[in-house]
Image (cartoon, rainbow, N blue to C red; front, side, top):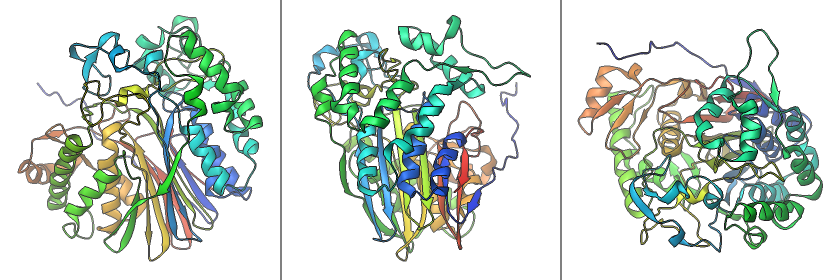
Length: 518
């Protein structure tokens, strides 16, 4: 019996072009907010702030102000790159003994050993200190040019309008319904009348209220970004989490500070690649580039190029799991989103933000309307390993925001969502553009493979038998279609400088994502 249920689509997504810059996002509606900022004279950092808060409202399963982030900033006038780390931190009162192992495998998107009651996966015990708002606020304070409250305005308006019930909302809520219904405020918002919200054919797109989120965003806009850490919002968060039995407290929020540092940079193929350092996928990507440099020819990648990608990814992933402690074995994307911005002066931002799992901890805090992350899941629950959980510790992350420059000039910015599949996708697009000489549009439409450490390569069937045979010399090959949902590949977007103007594009198979010119 034929078990191939798909027939390939011939899909092309248009790029956005403009002389004033471009914003790309997993939500085109959020990209519109950022592009409007560019048109009003804001820079790439301003546009990233507006887009970030907007996408948090319209894609609440992906990210939000209760989440974490990594952000790369390319400063055109200075010709340098800065990395801002808004990763989560385990609460100071966290007790590893409160997460006893039980028989079986758990971990949601990771194949960790199971923890009793899945308390590292969902619920109040799974919440880490959220770093995203301090991270993006610090970047804005350092490099932004527009008012903070103005940049949050689109998100406030979107939150007041409510969550649009389109096909993506229906799919995402349905996929998490079993867990969402366990938490009263989450159930009230996302399962109105006790059922998954569904759009009606022939009628305007309905919107569902988002609890107290709009009021919280208004407060954040007026009081400033640190209010989430040492103001009224922080106090409300701490009270709600304490009432739910979690360990995250007011001191954890007040003591949080995003980290700023130099990017992990290296020359590659006549360009300079800049990635996030430390506990991210940046070092692993650099390990791949070390192995493939000089082995990838010009033009569209052929069998030998894909085999080189597969071989190098397998080696780098093995080293990552051994030395950095991440044994992520996810087969569905984490709830991560990415956005990229380039402005008319060539400043670039590559920002990845996440709640970790789909809808994070599944907990919406009733007083603030904030969906909280489940960052404790990022830790290995087995004691004595490199990434084991401990109070006050930062976990390993799969995020891989990248910017690339050439001859001291901005070239492109890139990143993706998709758990451990992020880095393989980002690396291939980087190689296709630098090694292969492809432009952003063609590189995004080119089929990819994924090698994420599970002992095989996942291959887009459009690559054909010759590519499969070349990769099979190194590892088994599993052919998987590039579909809308669920997806076996990462979901990237990117922007760049293209001649005298700028260009941007979203993931081809994401109908709601896209790029908008400033």
